[in-house]
Image (tube, rainbow, N blue to C red; front, side, top):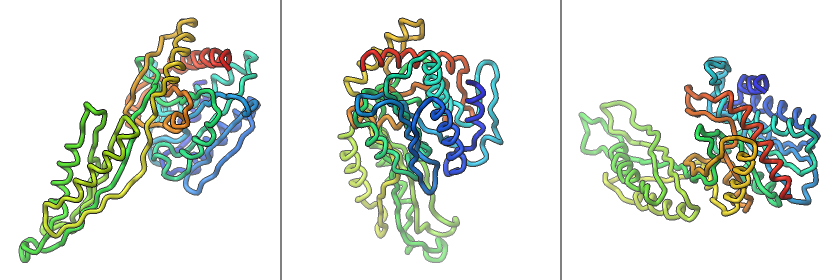
Length: 370
């Protein structure tokens, strides 16, 4: 298992690295084919393929096991930070998010195969551009389509050190705000300048005020660009914002609030434009998610594993696209660790083995209900 984990982390499948995404897809497809799965691949111009692997009849309720094969890092990161293990922790790009999870997914299927359990129908969905919120693919629509008729789903995203499983995730709306002003020389012609940065500064303050933790949403103005030199009034400024929200019905309300802020003008003569970037929908907290969690808790109790509690998570995931189709889903079934999306990312090596055995036990419990 550790060898497979290392092999995956060594593959450079960061954002926009299509060849690495293809290599990951080939590796996973080969393993799944040896386990008796039939493979379909959906190809894209700028990222690796999405894999749909099926074993058993899809005409009756089936189990979905899902994950992503890319990492949040850029080309060359595995060379700069190769896979290493020290003091029980593994390090390297994507070691936690989520190549450890993909390793668990494949290893649990391998363990069940070797034990003679392969009768229940399973569909595996692995995509290659989750980290940029599927900027390069139609994976969200594909996952929704492939989820219809499923009995339940497990997403092998980053696991947590408290052993919890995610039953609900916030949605993410990312958007751009652009302000267009008028440039001038601030020494010779200052009265004719219209500062786009000054206008944006007012807007940032008002946008950030929209955060309301009591209602489960928060906004972050995360990047900013604008201006050219200190002695010229800036004619242009642009920010990218990230709005997290808990309930699907929150999104149109938040859009309206942002539009209201951006329709106001503090610096006369400036104009403002709002446009969407990418994002994730919410992983809805279906009542059936809790039923599935109770089944996972029973499997843990019966086999001596830590009993997972329910978690609400602010980070988005592909579990949004199974729950929107009404499929009971548990997320964060991957290896446990912390600091994902940073160079300090680490994963607990022991949890790789424990969570593989735990997932095999959960799948056997699920099989009893099909």
